[in-house]
Image (cartoon, rainbow, N blue to C red; front, side, top):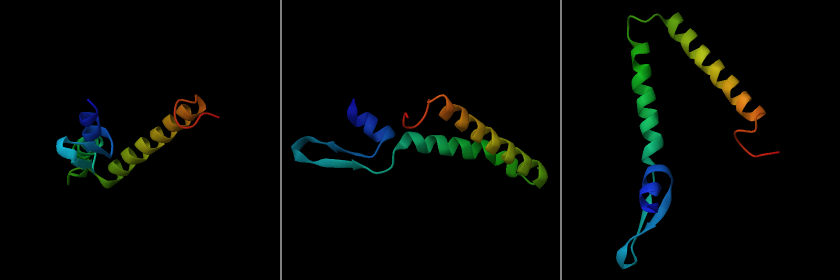
Length: 82
């Protein structure tokens, strides 16, 4: 089960038969998320979408992410515990 986890989510070395070692360089799972986000945001860059609308959307998303991060930190839900 560890080799599957290493390939999907982390950089690590996987021991193979005959003393061989394979290195996982780029974890697949986080990159799938980046690809999906790029695909979803692609429609915001079409010529019919006004620049002002796009800027407001990204500003709202950025502010929402900052607020979510602050709430997680206040509740000790993310990062090192004090």
